Length: 115
Length: 206
Image (cartoon, rainbow over all chains, first blue to last red; front, side, top):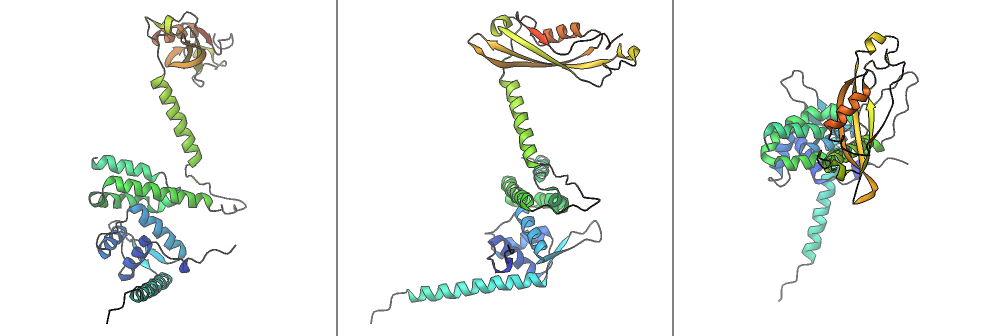
């Protein structure tokens, strides 16, 4: 059986937020958690378990790669790869299409103004 | 919960992860836990790590093992989840048996335990069976572990664990050691107490 193509599957909210956080800059683990909290106005707070679950999966898929620290004082950084950017833009396009379509439906359902 | 305790608890939770995952991310997760603990709360992070570990274990166990190399293959040192659960269950059952099991008091043991069996298990490896060095055997010691099961007057048809005892004895006087150990455990007054187990033979001691 062929493996499922992950790029076409919708991402979980946590996965989408992590990729979005890494789209701006290379970040270490705690930096990703802070960025996710900031970009969701504090509504999404991920723990280390969820974070590294996703990071491991992204690294296996080649969407994210880690930058090993050169000294003990530095933290390991994570960087979005070209494949990760493509997956993220694919997901954003899907969400954008969903938003536009839903808006159109909602506008069509509005009652007409009485003349 | 104080910081050191919750950090230690979190470190123990990390053991639930498959070994490769823990080796790669364990240290980072512990550092991030300490940074996030104030903002998110320890319990929320514990729940997060347990759920994440369960997911990783399922993924790890469902991934087919790579075919071993012809001359060398690495053995995974990750603890087997089924074995961990089995050991946890056995330890819990043993602890419950010791805590719940009724220990006879010295004064009324003859009424609590109508009959009992003392099984004893000398720990090997202390020289008791060193028949090639009898002069050492005579002075060597062993650990005696006793498990007493008995029947209560109100339920004579069923056996129940009433106590566990552990002691040390010199191998040239096992019978005396049994008596001392049984007295320490408060079992001596049981009228029908019988003992079983390996007996000293002529070849064991000089």
